Image 1 (cartoon, one colour):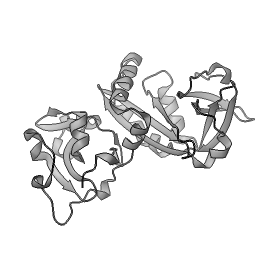
Image 2 (cartoon, one colour):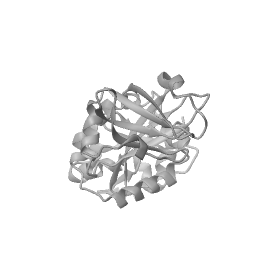
Image 3 (spheres, helix red, strand yellow):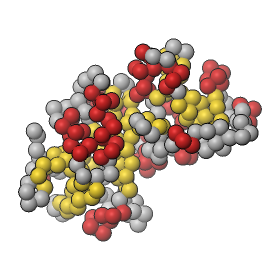
Image 4 (tube, helix red, strand yellow):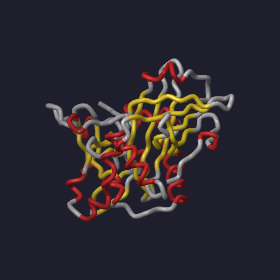
Length: 269
């Protein structure tokens, strides 16, 4: 078990990371987040005001697990923390986050000190859902993981835009409206090969049904039509698609049990 000492952690402004550390008087081992704010911040004043989001993204055959924290509007800084299951401590970290009731957070201040708060572990259910998914994956190298993170971030950054893209598109909202608007109402251009997958959803507007890339293997081994999810046309065209068995696949974040995560600004009603 790789347990870090607090003095070993050094971050640059805007950087964030995660390590296993000992906390409390009982020296309990927990997975903790480390954040280095760019602007001055009073961690204890925002303890109950931190926002959180999470997602699972497939990029270059690597499953990227992303957790995000956002400070309140008067500070408004976004931190993205990436998790690699295929490391020596990866499976243990995932297991711990699925069971930890609380989440320690260390703010690395500009004077070199670390201010500590502990909040409810809002990511507990998310990590509990990931275990079976990650166990079935083929191991990737740390180099492949870092390349996948950089590649995805090049498309999804800046961080505030990435935060917006993590807003969940709820499966229960994906119902066709009474008027069932069609292709003739769409003002943009949809490539001919994708028109067969066009649909109009009540709360998501003009969409194209795609297979999220993280479900590609399951779709390839089964009936691809059972793995289609509707995503806004803008999201699909920006991400790009490839084809399996005649069905479009797109690298759009997907959260098991919830659905796709798409940028709200991509929705065209």
